[in-house]
Image 1 (cartoon, helix red, strand yellow):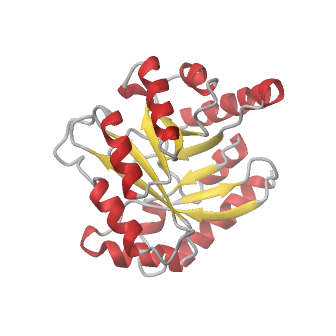
Image 2 (tube, rainbow, N blue to C red):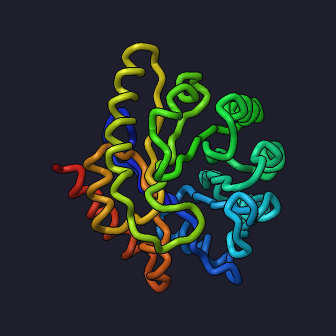
Image 3 (spheres, rainbow, N blue to C red):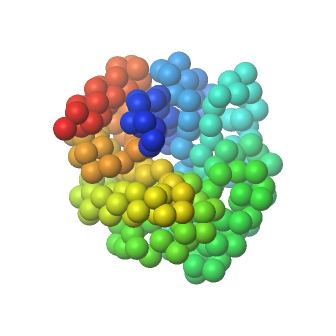
Amino acid sequence: MYLKDAVATLTLYHPLFLLLIARSDMKGEVQRCIDAGVSHLHVDVFDGVYLDSPYALTFGPQMVGAIKKRFAEHPELVLDIHLCVDRPARYATAMADSGASRIIFMFEAMSLDEAVKLAQTITSLGMKCGVSINPDTSISEIYPLLETGLVDLVDILAVEPGFGGQKFNPVSEQKIKDLRQWREEQHSKNGIDVQILVDGGINAKTIRRVVQAGADICVVGTAIFQNRDNFSAALEELMDSRNTGQEH
């Protein structure tokens, strides 16, 4: 799920989420998300290769397409696809055909030149483009890519990619602050703007910290899906915590 704050106005605006869902009830889980007021889904796609584990294998374009088709009566539903895969460029056209709204790729999966080329491909296919970085990657490494203007979102991982329920890594807080400062400088110089997303370890406590650091969006998994009986209550608790963080 995403808990989102509009960059320009700091006006609260409503969430989104995936993915720690019950795979045996995909339709029901997505419907419960929508019923709770969610308008965006963050779909983690692992191929078992980029992260070398037989358990790091999730969904492909077929599942993305099935979600899009099944919930076609909700045209407001946004599908952000986070590709943690080997050779992510292979997936761009298939994900576009499946109805993806944005592709977020791992910066560490390729060279800078390859990243620029992939961002060009993604945007040429009519999707938005995001980039994600691991906890050990310096935020400054992605600045040359951001300066192309092709990327509109940076996904700062606060956990190691692969599995839900991990502990929040505070190294992400300084990255948020550094990226926010860079964004302000770049926006005043050449109009470049990016949204700052934090992904992993987000709960009622850590959401305050990342909001105070300057995050615009939080991806939430465990904190929502561990409360399957009442998604709305879990979501409301997170929103209240986020609002508290914004007040400081």
